Length: 272
Image (cartoon, rainbow, N blue to C red; front, top):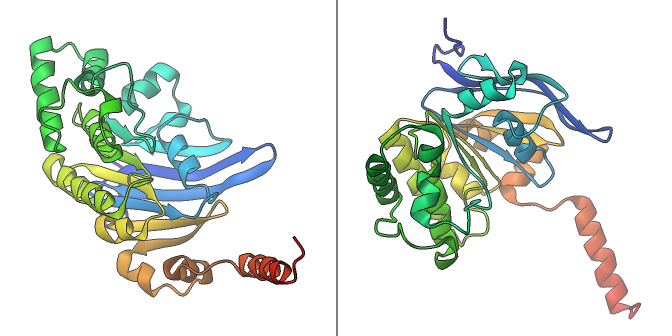
């Protein structure tokens, strides 16, 4: 029987008591979360909060110190590499850096998963590649090299590669990072479009509040390895947790304000 959330929806991803530590320092502290079929869950947090570490463990790039990670009911932490790869072929990943192979054309980048993991005829692969590029607004760019694309176009090409095998789950790591607000807003709309077209479940890591408000159905917020909030956008806006309020209102830490004040005083007193 399929795992289900309290509301009855199937859980596509489940994280149970995930603990991660590096050199004796705890980065994730017994983290628990569910991702329901068809929703977009945003993992939010500041720099060093553990959000990208959490994503890397969910997609199998790193092994945890303890806990379970279930993709469609299969615990990938208990599988060998071959079994884990079979499960993870059902997911797509868009990395923060786009991670395009610079020695390959855009079309070959998008076609790579199909060539590696299917036995489709090359003519079929070419057709599917063109369809996926058209879906992300890059029709006709098959023969371009990644270096010939802008940052936003490279990210769109990365989305095309991530959906090349029609994944059930799409993971996005900081999809708008390094892009101007207009290009970032376009990527948010692309995520919504792909979700509707392919009926995917999406997990997105970000610290961009505008993206959160656009794409999230639910979100969790991490701080120093702990989940300090989980819920809907309305619940997030109404949350009275001090760290959440600080994040929403873009208020600096008091220590940062004190350091700035000391620097300004020293500067005015000609201490430099």
